[in-house]
Structures are given as C-alpha cells and as structure tokens.
Length: 183
Ligand SMILES: [Fe+2]
Image 1: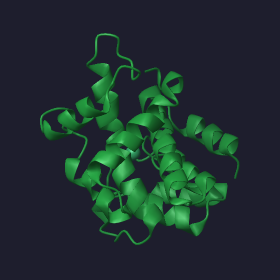
Image 2: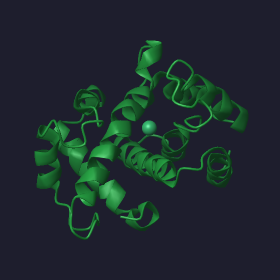
Image 3: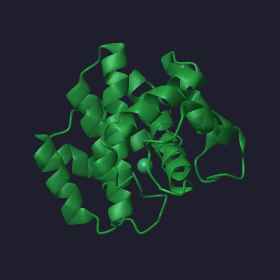
Image 4: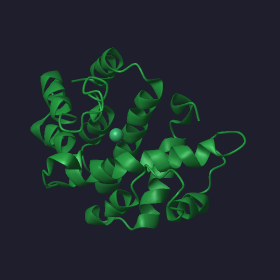
C-alpha cells in the first residue's frame, strides 16, 4: 500500500475534514516516533494515518469502531502488525497492547488532540507559536481539551519516553506539517 492509496481511501470514507487532519497529525507523530526508535517509518506512519478510517462508517458505535477499521486496513494491504495496532487502539474491545507499534499508536492518538487545542486557543490559532512548556502546562489542566485522555498520553513511558520527551516530539512533529493541519 502506498501513502496515496491510504489517503485516497480515507478521503473516500471520511467527510469530516477535522477528522482527516487528526489522522494526518497522528501519522506525523507516528513517523517521528518511528524515526526516534529506528522503526519502519512507513509502517508506523501509515498505521497512524489509517487508524480511524472507519470512524464515520461506524457512526460512533465503539463496539464496532476499529474492528471495521482493522478490516479495511487489511484490505488495503496493511501488515498484520498494523492491523493489530489499529484494532487495539480502541480500548472498548479490551484487546491488550502487545507491540511497540500498538503502544505507540495508543498514546499518540490523544496527544494530537491536546496539541491541536493548544494551538486553537491562541489568537493566531497557529502551531508555530506554541511552546513546549505551554503544552506541558495544558497537559496538567484536566479541563483543557478534556477529551484528550491524559492517562493514555502518559502511557508513552511504555515505549520508553518520558512524558516531557513525548510532548516535545509530538509538538515538533505536528509543527512539521502545520499547513496540512490548517494550524
Ligand atoms: Fe484517533
């Protein structure tokens, strides 16, 4: 599967542009994590890109979300490692996180929401001016972007990153694709 094929399939299945941006942001964070760990950047990036591909097809039904996505990813030619990471990123299924790829996607997913919110509260609504220390401060404000699950983000320690390192990496990764995110 090429990145273009993955993106074309996402665009065919998702109308909400903010959701597509969330998936692009997750891709960027996953690529940065793969580079940090010497893992397969394409595999990790495409896992992030595809992880919510079924979000509109499943219409908010968490009992099917990510199961359908895993099937769609497999049909597109994703490896079984990618399929498993997509499947278990929805904790509703109770499928244990096993691999480093599983764990990376699990903590990268909510981080994108926190960083996006940190940009959107700025007057210019741009990522460029967001500093690492402000993301760290926002992380501790539980009511800020409450949907960005802090415990899940903090699971970055399971892949060997301290929280501050992970927040830095995520912020830099998203800044790197800021125009695509409209931020
Ligand atoms: Fe997601």
